Picture: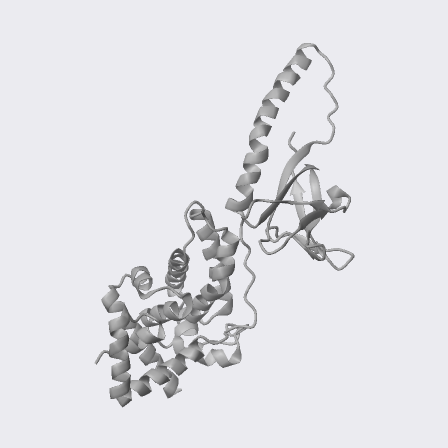
Length: 157
Length: 192
């Protein structure tokens, strides 16, 4: 039987928001994308069993669209992945975590994407490999590489 | 050396053979062990509290409510509309004056998801603020009741287990009432 969507929402909202926040470092942007993702998940797939993998796929696509649309806007990349996170974006984020997010923004897009998924979603390597278009053998190497790179960045700060 | 075993250990992805390999490497290789501890500490930080409050998300209720509403009152209504057209034609043919219609009522289904409680009641201006018990839908966690509402704006909320008042989480519009509670506001469009 299909799980009631509200239950699905309650079970996933915190982890999913964590994923978006680790990806963007921006509270408002993450809120908007979370709203849009859950809405799409419900509207388009109302007849299917809800799955967290689907939710993350939708969220990931929305993030991609957003970054592509903003590509013309030079300030976007600077704000998000260049000079770090400005004050407006840190709204709502705990101070001690801001350092972690700043470090995450210095990873490559793919590294940040993979690490955010691993840390936040609770999905298996197999599911993450599928979502990100990697082989299972490849994903474990990439996950570990992203982790050690983050360690180096955090150390340099 | 298979460094990635550390990440697989952190993420609970090791199978039994890899566990053996991991433990042996931790035992034999000091660098590997230190790296594992550092990455576990980093993971603790990564998994840490990020925000004090999560943003509010409005969940549209396509599958849980609106489609039920649609089926429960729209389809019977089409039959009703046809009947009214026939009646009207008869009236006009006999040149009788059109009837003065009483305020139209539309059946509205209220649904709330509270699997964790024993009793849910609906109170609203249309019940003269008298609690109306809601019916539990099996073990689904949903409570429901149908009420015929006159068209216009209505205010209501739910009473849970006799002591907690809550607005309808699926309705955006709400307002504070005079007693410290919050009421949801809906607009009912009359059937004919």
